[in-house]
Length: 298
Image 1: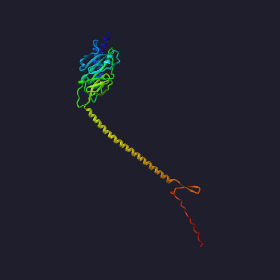
Image 2: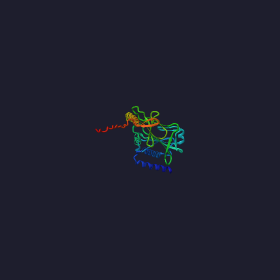
Image 3: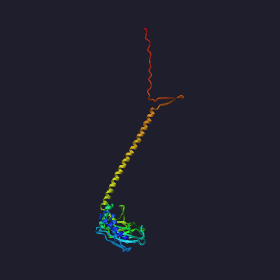
């Protein structure tokens, strides 16, 4: 009775979602999850890969699922199409069994990631492959897949189309927070990962090298202009400091001379200190009066 209620709930969720246009990568994951659990029955053999049939509005997407025991996955690992999970891989939290869903979004639905992630300057040359784990229960909550000492290997094989010009392909991981992580491939058409998610192979777009060269040229020109401007400003500063020092020395010299010219001259007369003015002072003029002879009586 409980399983019928879960199936009915998933059917109602799927019908509600189908009425919406799928523009979100996260919403697409939920739709695929719902169809997978609708197809799930107790006849699913543990450890066997099962193909999931999707409706026509999701044509081009290929989905497979497998039910695994958490302990067996950790002891032996598993191979799920392009994904190879090595021994030591574990799912948390996991009580007993886990449902792992493998997605191949094909060329059409992989373009959805250009609308949800910042990929300007790069070109996707492979379909987006997804690996997600869910709890087998009423909630069907998403679980975390993590590796031990050996990472998950993703073999894109012939799914990644060739690229011209000798551009080095890069592995891309599309995180749930909207960010894209890029790293070098360990070997051709192979990527490695330490946890679940969505992955692809990208290369730089043909215009990217041109943009980089233009950016380097602008940086070089800007650096030269900046260096020249810096030298010019330093020269002005040095000249200002030198002129200020010369002006200060000239003012000090003028003050010294003025003080020496106007200072009083001090001399010793006997034991008395006599203070005389500077030689530049005007000396008093002595007028000599000559008396006339008395007038003659003759």
